[in-house]
Image (tube, rainbow, N blue to C red):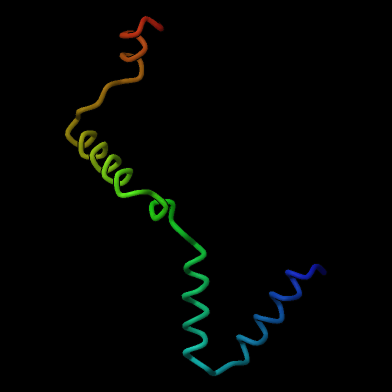
Amino acid sequence: MDIIQLDREEAMKMLQETDDHSLIVKIKKMLAKKKKDWWDDLTEEQKEELELGLKEFERGEVVSYESILQRHGLR
């Protein structure tokens, strides 16, 4: 058994045996922070660009991949 598995099992046992609600809540928050969404790593400018692109798509302001290739003589 590797050290990570051993530590995990010990931590789970300790968690199962505790009645300290505040500790359980803190652990849940710490673990939730580890599961980060890629959106949170974007800059505000990147988020704005993506939101603009989605709005353009919703309005039907799109260009097909094929038309771009044709326009540039690639097809």
